[in-house]
Length: 276
Picture 1 (cartoon, rainbow, N blue to C red):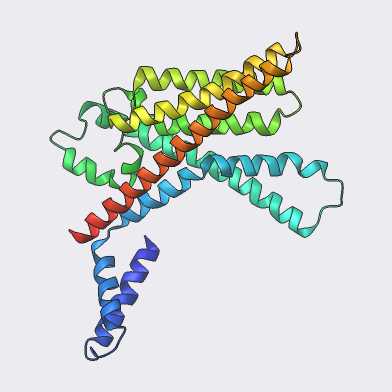
Picture 2 (picture 1 turned 45 degrees about the vertical axis):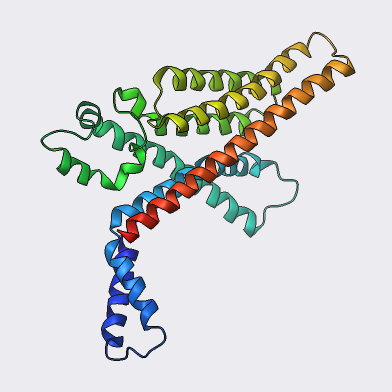
């Protein structure tokens, strides 16, 4: 918000200064940028910032936990870089926990309005304007049930638990894969039963992505259990590995395609917003 106001102020000053000098080669560019900034409100930038932070939430948590967990097992004496990295990891982890609490608080605080009115009602315009800065948290989701609106914090909690299992339970692979399989199963059931996503094609593609990932997790879980009792022959191991490889490739392709479509939709929405 502060940066946006500062940019608007600076470009408006440049516009006034260059009004008498329209032969300046940079004048059309400055004029165009000033017009665009004057048409963009704070909520647009805030939602884009939220989208970016949420997109790196899981990787940020994983980096922070790995840094904190293995900081005490370094073979060499800690250096300045090591302490700075550890400090950034602690800050990043606290920030991500705060973000999870903030997102959950925003949705829970406004849950009654979002569920009961669904954006329709006597005070809908006023309420929607107030929640405009957080629209990325509920615009793409159904509002029939409270549990549907909690998709973002539930996904964030799932990501946090997932990276905690990966980073802190590396000494016990069977515990890791068991907890990850239970976590994945619970999320799949939530997604199928509650159907939080509003757009049908997005819901189906996300479900397909989750099922392919779930197939990989299930195979790993079954193999980890079987390996404790019997030794698989080479042919069976190769066949299982091939299935696992196909599921992984399929999951990667669907995930990349889904991200590409969402990115193109975002670019299209920004273009139409600036054009209108």
